[in-house]
Length: 404
Image 1 (cartoon, helix red, strand yellow):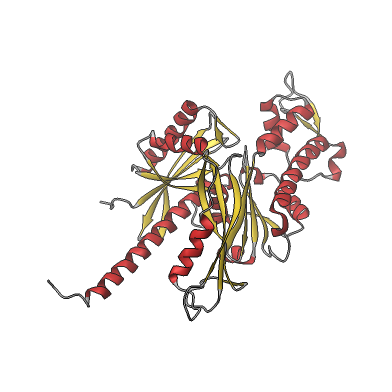
Image 2 (tube, rainbow, N blue to C red; image 1 turned 30 degrees about the horizontal axis):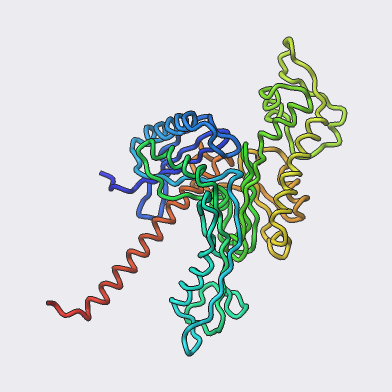
């Protein structure tokens, strides 16, 4: 009999599909994926739920499929958060070290963290994440200021908040299947956790996850996430551009994108023609390959340019030595990493999934939901560490207690 709580679930309600993974934890250290469920998304536009019933039916079908495949039921899941309603603001905090000898204590650390997080958001907004940047002690960066000497302790949080109604809708969908939401995780953080290493994040990296309806991105420096963002533009917009530019239906444009789309213009393609369907039936026709390249390249470049402009001074070779990592379903476009390298003027690569990931989910479109499992596993490890620390403290204290 497997102990209760040895399984964790992850749910991403995306624009193109709902993805559900169930992972089995061994000894709080290893994770095996034992269940996968998917459903083509309905009622979701640009990461926002616009038809609650349709989105619920799809999500519940995907959860049920994952549970049936795993042969178990989960009680709680980690839920991805994306959508244009998400916003981030930087909240700094500063305190004077309280001890007479100017040694930073635990209370000073907790006090500066509370000061930085005390900022309120509008009533119709809800906080998703407080993402802490490194501490600063008298102007020098420190990872752990406790017991160090100084006068002024500072810290900043990148606080991400979203429309309360949109967030509540996604939670209600999960609750409606008799599940609770263990935690809400930004899609950008989840993707970054699975396609980058600790070394990548320590050296500085920007992760750009281009999905069907949104582009989620996160900037890391010194091992910490400094900034995140969501752009309500993704692969669907490329399809729409092709549809308008070549006068095709949405279905035809999507087919053209998948068959012929690439992120750079090729000189050799200027005179090349491709067939719309290739079956030579009525309605089949030839399309200029150069026009397809031109449309796709323009949109991809625009996405990267907007992300670069929004991230501002954080983007630069001195800050992001790892460079750019591109993931998400749209990262399958050939040469998209070349466009990222050119726009950001940084090294760029397509995000690779860890070797332990099962073959049936080794696809960039699963980066977010895989990252949710990563957060779930490490969250349990942290809870176990805290529990062990607490038990050790109790055992130490018990030596000084006199039995009644």
